Amino acid sequence: MFYMLIVLVQSQTTWEDPTTGMSYNWKSLKRDPDNYYEVVDSNAFFIPSIYSFNFGEDLPTACAGQYPAAMESVELLDGWMESCSILGRSDMQKVQSVNNGIEITYKGGDICYDVSSINTRQISFQLICSKTEGQWEIIQSTFTNYCHIILKKKTKAGCPVQFTFTWVWGLIFTLGAFALYFIIGTLINISQGSGCIIPHVSFWEGVWEFITDKMTAILEKAKGVSSKQKEVAKNYEMV
Image (tube, rainbow, N blue to C red; front, side, top):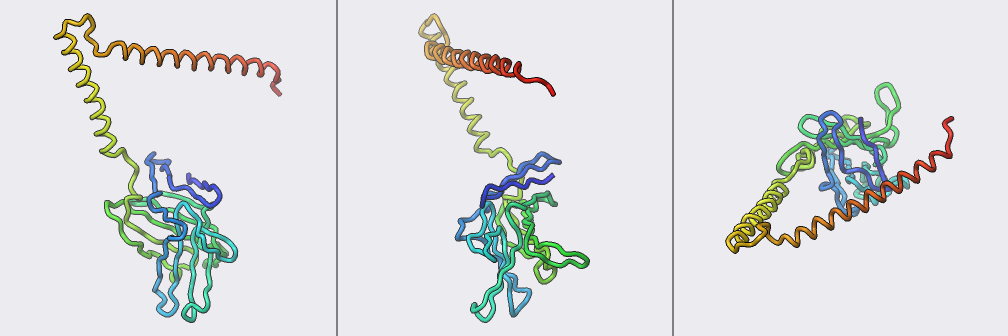
């Protein structure tokens, strides 16, 4: 099961593996529109190709009057001539798991010819889980497979999203501070011979009253909505 979501020029940067339930987020790889990725493929010595792409954002540079998520460009005659080809579109993005990471694919590029059929070009990005950020590697270039280009990168974005130690320690610190507050407050009240050992009992009674009032109001509102829905349902007939 793949996700194919897009809102105008923005594509998804999160995905949950339906098999393992692990979540991934590659928003950190998204660059500013004018600072998109450019990977030079020098497999052809005289005419190198440039793969341009971004994540979560379409390219600001048009190719054949369209703004794709990824494209290939070739400069000829020292920049006097330039040609481009669409490699994939953000509204045809697919994600799947690979060994120790995920693979993001932009499909729906320009027409290309496989061995026995007409197809469309696509480009895949393999994000391999790593503590450090690596450079883009060309696994399959336009000169070895014109229809399907594959790039790979070692990155933290290829790792499943997990709770950070900062969040865990923050929760532990908060709970510890509350426990310390109640212990010290209780000891002070006992030493002073107070009739109530709970510290600042008036404050906490006010908090409890506030919560109960809000919950009562929410429940009353829910009952009112339910009654209205029942009245409306009476006017419909099952067909």
